[in-house]
Length: 141
Image (cartoon, rainbow, N blue to C red; front, top):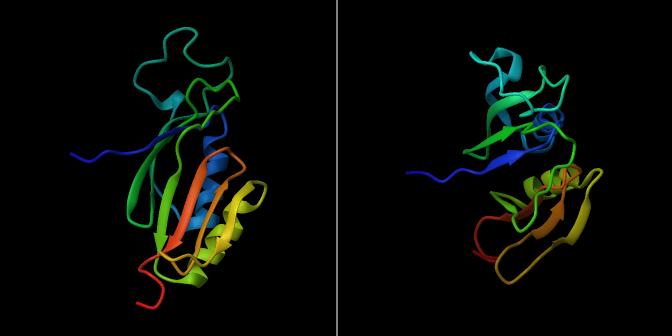
């Protein structure tokens, strides 16, 4: 049974999905809005006027399926104590993805060569999601 990450963007899900399409070549494989649900959400479950927000989405990055939603649409996403790790086959791919994710975000550890990867770096993107990017294999392999 797989374990999947479910990201709640609190009203910015569609914006985040578009950003990940550009930054990581993400592919959105499913998207349902609150207005499309067979039953309306219970009163108070989402912020008023959120009918067009994303109730549930599935997207793929580097062969991994992630889940996403706008949650209760209150505009206060909080991604703490976690990071999504992406291993890419080349330094060039890691550098491109890292630069794209860093736009409007904050770099915690700049990309660099380490004893375990030709490129390794950590950042938080503009939505507050933590990312760890690295190359496959060890240097010199």
